[in-house]
Structures are given as structure tokens and as C-alpha cells.
Amino acid sequence: MISAGEAGPRVASGVMARLVGVAGLTHNPLMWSLLASGTPDDLVTTASHVRSFRELVANLSPDVIVLVASDHLHMLVTSNMPAFMIGKSPSIRAVHPNEQRSFGLSPATIEGHPTLARYLLGGQGMTPEFDFAFSDEPWLDHSFVIPLLFLTPELDVPVVPIFTNGNSPPIPTAARFGHLGSYLADAIASAPGDERVLVVGSGHLAFELGGPRQFLGVSPDREFDRQAISWMADGDLDAAVAGSSFDRLTRAGNETYQFLNFVTCLAAAGSRHADVSAGPESRFGALPFFFWDLT
Amino acid sequence: MSRYTVNKALWDIDLTDANLEAFKADPAGFLDDFEASAHDPRPPYPRGGSLTEDERRAIETLDFGALYAMGVNPFLLWQFARSVAVPDRMTIDDLIASFREQTEPHGSPDFAT
Image 1 (tube, chains in turn cyan, brown):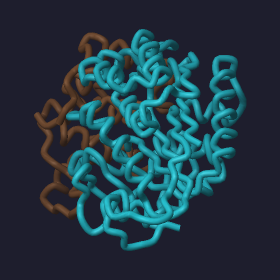
Image 2 (cartoon, chains in turn yellow, blue):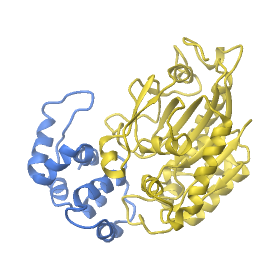
Image 3 (cartoon, rainbow over the protein chains, first blue to last red):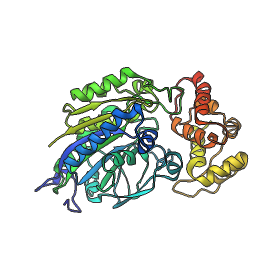
Image 4 (tube, rainbow over the protein chains, first blue to last red):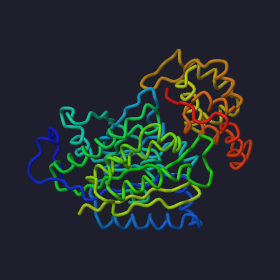
């Protein structure tokens, strides 16, 4: 186990935690509710990816999940909006009341992993590499919960949630999301303990909600989707960063900023070629599925 | 104009079933209470704020096109639109069509607060 009270990633010694894999996937709540009651024709390939990812994660047997997602103005509104924030409570509330009404999600309580969370924060001092905000009372919305329900349906793996601002401009740059991934990989690799750690990113390919290009039945920007899938398949972090400027993401759809959580995934995976890089088409556009097995 | 305060109002309306029902029953009364709350702030998330006449009108009359053009957060706007309009006023398919018609002329507004 990771021991409490460590001062930060740079002082670790002895047995280390291990980053065993990285997964990036969709959190579309409407798609989740459709799959919960059957498999429509346009979601057959998506459902297959979900089953496959669940098996891949089960085979990796993670002890803790570091989950990178963007709160959708549920817990965090712009009275206080951090760029990057770690939740470090031992018990984490999940699903907000309006998500019960809108999406049919059930409220849940998920075990946290405060020791690893504090380690990622830097222990008693802020890390020189990355300056997170933190919360002792994180409250997860669907962007966190749905990937967990897909990958670990019993919600029985402890989680360190990392909130990224992917919804309220100004959005951190793609380069910054890349630095986050590199930092997480380095910090996990140097964390004392024997945990098997899985990093999960939650987000979209080209996607729009609350604008004229929502619910078109197809992706709002197939060229962006094609490029994004190639960046992950090729392990090309530089191209992913260069191709994910704020203006380019805006053109791909007003919710596409959350693709940046996959840039974090790619960097956390050491810019390796993804073992899985897919974007099956559906009525919601292309749905992202990225996986790196690091064992 | 304050995108932040309009976002805050839409967030507040959709936050709980009680708030949503209160707004649907009396939009003007709800917004009166929302604005008055700014004079009794309770940290860490003080409620309320001042809305302009145009902002109040757009929220009260469910003018999604006007709200979109103001640059309110698109996610909050869609959640608000769906919660207040479906199923009381229209079907989800009708809302999607109406929403597209109202927002399309405005392109992709800057929605930074």
C-alpha cells in the first residue's frame, strides 16, 4: 500500500506503484441510457467496445483508477473554476440530482484513495511540475461516473478523480493537458506502494451540445475524428497538441474541448501507439475508445 | 450583460426538482428571488446576481436563441431548455428542431465568462 504522509513524487523510494494501463472513452449519458435498456443497431459496435474494454480492465486488475474528466458545471461553476483539481476524500459522492432526472443515473458513493491523491498533489508542498487545486469533498458527475460504470460496473475500484476544465473557456492549452499526462505517469511510477494504477480519460471526439450542430445524427466534424484517431494510433503527441488548438476544437463542436483529456491519456501512456484507437459511428457522432496496455 | 450571472441562473433553475418546479410555476417570481439572494450572500457559493432586462426576458420567455446569442454556456443552456420545455411544452424532437432553428443564425458565439 502507498503510505501516508509522503512529501511528494521526488522523494519516493522502495517499492513503487505501477501504471498498468491507460483507457480513454466516451461518457455520453444518452448513449449510456440507451445501452442500459438494449443495443440499438447504431450502437452495436460501441457496445462491443464497451464489453472489450471491461475485459481489458478486468485483466489488468487495477487497484486504483486515476480518472481524468471534466465536470459539466455540476460541482464546479465559474464562481470558482480550477484548471486542474484533484479530489482527495476517502469517500466520494457521485451523481447530481438533475442527472438523476435527466439521465436516469442512480446516486452512488465511490471509494477514494486519499493517499495516492495527496501524493499526486505533492504531499506537504505543491509540486514544482504541476500545480493542482484540490477538493476534500469532490462530487462526481456523469463525465466521471459513466466511464466507471462501463469499465467497473460494481464501482468497486478506488478512484482518484482529477477534474479538468473542459467546459468553461478559457480552457487550458493542449500542451498543458499533455504535461498533465506526463506528470501523472512520472508521479505514479515514483509513488511508494505496490498498487496497480489505471489512468482513465473521459471525453469526446468532435461533439456539440447546446448549439445548432447538436443531434445531427452524424459527427459535426469527421475530419477531426479521423485525425484524432490517427494521433492515438500513431502515438503522435506532438500532432495531437498541434491539432487541438482552442479554435480547431471549437470548429469541431462546442463540447470537443473534452478531447483534451485524451491528450492527457496519450502523454500518460508515454506517446506509445494505442493498442485500440477507434471511433465507431453512432447517432451521437463518433464515440471514442482508446486503450494502452502498459504491462 | 453578465454571462456569468445568466449561467448561474440557468444552473440554479436546473439544480434541483424543487427549483425547476418553482421556476416553471412562476418564472418572474423565481428570478425576483434569485436576484434578491445576491443581497444575502452565503459562501462558498453565493446565490443570485443582477440580471439586465434583456437577460430576464430571455430566461422568463424561454428564448433559447437569445440566450445562445448572449454567449451563455451551451451545456447549461441545453440542460435548461430540456428541463423547462420537455415534456410540458413540446416533445424532445420538437425541441431539438426548434433549438436548432433558434441557434443556427448565431454560429458559435464566444461563451467565455
